[in-house]
Image (cartoon, rainbow, N blue to C red; front, top):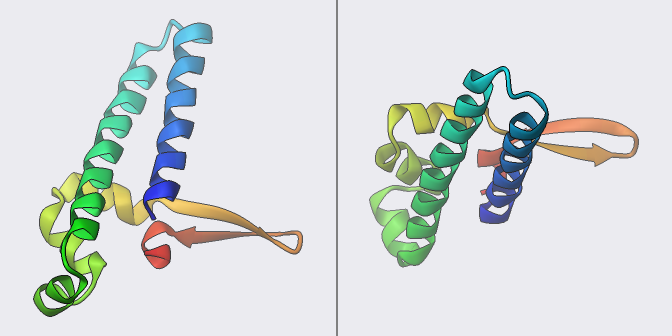
Length: 103
């Protein structure tokens, strides 16, 4: 899950570079992408914190990683995480899976 989030961060960073280099008239779009980048950093930090805990502690206390993240992320970060989708190619069709499904 962490690597998928890092990949999404790289895509957002690439969009920031594109907007900064080629579309200097719309600074609002750049601010939105930078905000999304910071939110992804907070989500990754929380996921890594969960991975740092003993698996039995997480299971006994929270049940699943999804419950852990729901309790430790802010409302805005949780909404972003639940709306992130991983795109997979499967025999010519495009599948959109939630990031939480791969945790």
